[in-house]
Amino acid sequence: MNKGTSIDNKSSAARFKEMVSVLKRHGVIHGVSPEKLKLILEDLGPTYVKFGQIMSMRADMLPKDYCNTLAKLRTAAKPVPYEEIVGVIEAEYGIGADEVFREISRDSLGSASIAQVHKAILNNGKTVVLKVQRPGIYQMMEQDIKLLKKALSFIKVLKIQVGHIDFKMIINEMWSAAQQEMDFIAEANYIQELCDLNADIKYVAFPRVERNLTTPRVLVMEYIDGVQIDDLENLKMLGYDINEIGIKLAENYVKQIVDDGLFHADPHPGNIYIHDGKIVWLDLGMVGRINNHDRRLLKKTILSIVKRDIQGLIDVFLAMDTIKGSVNYTKLYEDIESLLARYGDLELADLHLGPIMEEVKDILNFHQISLPSGVSMLVRGIVTIEGALAACSPQVNLVQIMANHASGSIFREFDLKQELLSTAILLNSFAKNSLAIPEQYSNILKMAIKGQTKINIDLTSADEPVRRVDLIMDKLLICLLSASFIIGSSIICISDITPRLYGVPVLGWAGYMIAFLLAGWLIKKIIRKK
Image 1: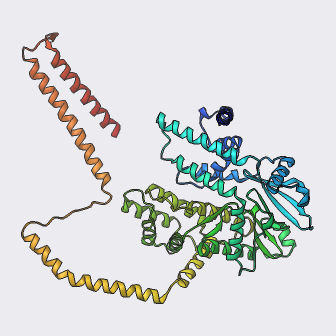
Image 2 (image 1 turned 90 degrees about the vertical axis):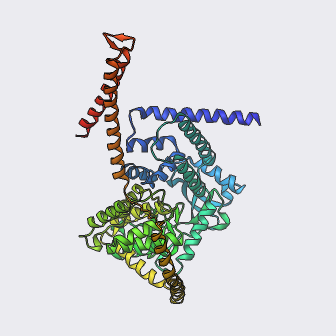
Image 3 (image 1 turned 135 degrees about the vertical axis):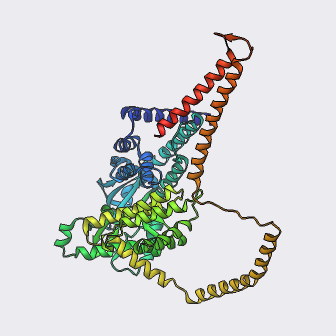
């Protein structure tokens, strides 16, 4: 047991030295730009690449330029040698790879932070795709997580300022997401769930999973020999209507969000292919989920933006159960009014949902209203899908499709029987409360006559005026203290108090000095204010 612990400690020490070396090489003491941060995370390895991916979705914590740069971390990673990939496959199956596969391509189709993809042929002649986990990735990431948490404890002990970023929450979120992504059984389940939810959509497909060959570290799926959605030249040569593809892509993605609450969280063009007249969604390792409550709020948000309904947006924001503190309603109203005014002159077809949602996130962050779980991932997904649409069908507008879909879904969700029952309950409650009004009014009058009435006034958004009054009172107090010291010192000077310096009592000198310092501080503040 002690020997194992010693080995772990040596391994951790070596990894720590490697991390320090990377930080030195990039000169972090001279500052960290968005591009430099991206390069540092890439050099630190898969754990930190995944960390950067999670951070890229947290515009409520990082500036937009950092988020946009970190989003590029989703590109290819350095491939693992073929022999190591085969080693993982054989370790999972407990038999030789050649007993399952007739052939495995030596060159990878793609390599990411957690897994690598190879084309293969089963012994029955079927062509498949192998998604194989990088060897030792779980242990490496687990070790890095421990080191990150130790670093956080040092930051806390040394009281290093890191702003309002809750790194502990981000690390836990990243580790949870990474563990989910490293469980290929879970990914296979997501693929199956999405297949079931879209079974009636004839123009959408997902790769079929070979369940009997799929393990937590090896995912075997059918090989899709299609055309990437932004390869417009080949799509046109094959006779596809690009505009129709864009419309169907947008409609299906909106359905995933608004109706199903389960959506592809990384819908970049490389993950969307056209095959046999169908849109095929690939790489379901990153999937987002939204609950019914948040989906309803999202629908109302979209409709309020489309209708330029300020009060509707305020109602949506205040309905969130993630408000961290008191809300400045006046400022919130002004910010929403300003947001809608910037888009007020645009036609619906010219609106882009991604930038609008990013601005909504900024407003919520300013007013200490955090986004519900899953919505940050959704915003990044919307930005990504709009980028894909811009590449293949720029005339297709996601806002318009989502607004139409949201309006229809709200109508479909309308239950006449339930609404009538709710209305009857409200009317009954209103009638009961109305009968109590005369008695309550009589009690108020009696209390007023006896002088017992008290009125509590909550001055919403009065923090700034109160702060200004506090500053004025502070300056007035300093002024009074300074005058008091001058008067007190002058009285001491005409007394016989000793010791004396140059014929003036030392206590008097001290009083004049304090008065001088207070007056100087006050004058400095006044000059700075001007």
